[in-house]
Length: 480
Image 1: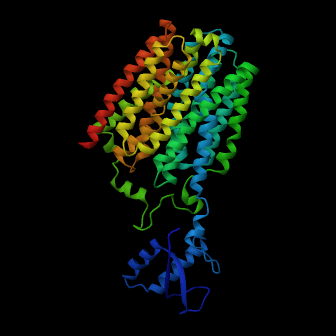
Image 2: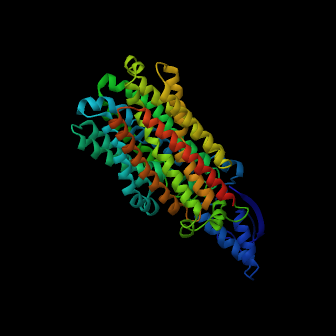
Image 3: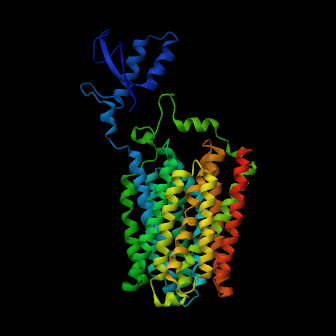
């Protein structure tokens, strides 16, 4: 709390007129007093009115309670509870519904009597559902209580897991995937960037990186746990366990989320009162309107980057299926699930690093992560009987997998500011959904038709190389 002592003859409704009162006043109110008193309004009347209003709103210490800045600093800002809730939604329902999808393909393939490549269309259906629902969910999150929006998303994901546990045909599997996409769209694309931007005037990139990193942590943990559970209790019961875990997350979304700092009588973390405005307000003043942004070459370069980047992402879900085709995978039934966990470890580290350095060096950090993805895909193509090489390949691919949910928001904000960020980034998110859906369909088809995974990894390398060229072009356009 940025408070200073002001001593003046003021009128206090609890004291006699003319008594000298020492009040602890926000700096922004002192500046307001200075401006208004310059128009001939008595300072004493102004100060009395403002302080009385603040006391009634519980924004100043009440009489007899001298709250120092140090005392105020001991209370944890509610913005960090919001981050903790977003971490939990990333770690549990988001990771279970998205990062762990691939571990169910081998047993479901046998149970439903279909090819594994056909099951990979799960992610295509999921992303199409997210694409259709994103505009509606965006309006809901902007206009309604964020607690209801996030809790509803968690409930939909839990219900989808229950549906999956009773799946006996392919259409039921795809229907559950569509429901899953609605919940995941809210928790992945909209909630983290929107709420963190509202609650954090500074270090938003770091907070976003932390939240998104826990999709990697969750994938690493739950892929291994899920693989073990499938071996012990079967895929159907494992889906029910995932449903129960997801439902528990509703406690966090109900009690640790608030739509805006004003709902709690707070300012955003990092709010700078010295200049009399938020840091984020300064960005709004210099941001580019959406109508103007949509006409710039940089916007279309960002869309192209989003498409080529995300279309290769579904390759991750094919890692367990690919492992089951290798001799080492037959000898080690948990190889695929463990490799998924290793990839999630790479994703976790990638998101944390990108969140910390991505705002200052977006092009360099993105190119480095893309280089890791190219190396990992190349190693997958040449792996033979080496388990360590398979794990290294998964780790490097995981580093690449960590780019999209951290760097795409940062590239968008760096190019267009915060003036109409939500409207601009919603267009970028729609491209991400389209490309993910396209990629899942393309890779599944390639594997089913070609009967080989080499073409899939080769295609991923080509797309990553194209993305590198686009990133360089974005950097040049931003400097022009």
